Image (spheres, rainbow, N blue to C red):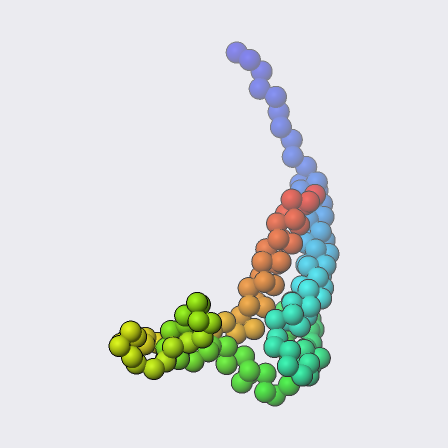
Length: 146
C-alpha cells in the first residue's frame, strides 16, 4: 500500500494570503476608479454636441465613496440629450439628381417617407464606452492578481 503524503495547511498562511488579496483589490479599486473618472470625462467631452462649446466645457467627474459620477453642469444638457433623433421627412433622396424628391408626379407617384435616424443620446454612448473600459481594467486586474 503506497504511503499517502500528509498535507499541512497553516491557517496563518491562508489568513495572510486573504489579507494580501484584500489589500491588492483595495489598491486596484482606487486605481480603476481614478482611471474611469479621467477616461469618462474625456469620453463625455468627445460625445457631447459642440455647437458653442459651453456644454463640453461644463463636463465634470468626481469620485464619491465607491461610485464615479460623470456629468455636465449646464441645465439644458438633459434637453439636448433627448434630441438625438432626426424627424421623419417626406420624399426620397435620388443620388443621381443630388436632391430629395417630394412632389407627386407621373414618374414619382409614391414619394415615400424617410423614417429619420435612430436616437442615441450622448449620455448612453458615454456609459457604454466607459463600461467597456471598466471591463477591460477588471480583466487586467484579475490576470495580474497575486
